[in-house]
Length: 252
Image (cartoon, rainbow, N blue to C red):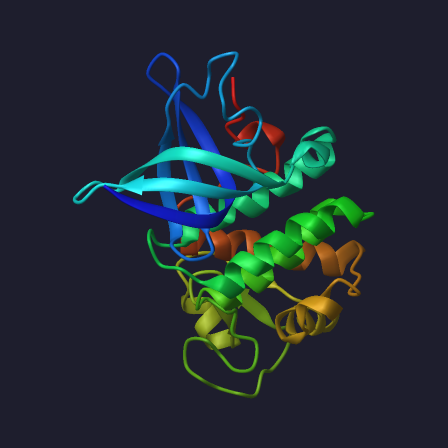
């Protein structure tokens, strides 16, 4: 067995056997991986509360050839997730962030900017006056980082750069489509107002330091939420749990 040391963000966990837990992480150096924490559910477990979802940890892992499941031997807690788990609105939004990462990232494919974006997104939640909106901005950035950036400059189906009438967002095509292509889509498109389109374009292009300054309310927000929810569903290949704290498998 080879010893591996890595910094991770806990995505989710589930019970395994009588006292163990299978934990899914996003590792800065290894990408999305899974490990088994032996005895993690015992009252006096050496892991304590370090393996809670949303926490940032430094792990010692043992890797066995031919086995995709690591064995967790030691955990150092870097940033606790307690504040996120004590407020239902924060927990809802943090759950959506980690669910999206878990759903659309491949196993074992490290992406340090994605790790940094997720970590900053979870930190931003604690400072946010509107956690669901912060989670929405994170999802838009994540799509761009993972190669699924929504197309907003030309028709995602035919390439046309000039649009007549109200813009249409096609989750299946992955971006804006012209009226002719919109009529050919297998699923309903989302009509975007000019304000909704402008917001989406800004959210895609702004840096992490400035994107949190964006604001959207009313119709614009509803449009963008519907478009991104539909697109994430297509990319993930399934509808993710709603923004609801029960969507995270908390230790129990």
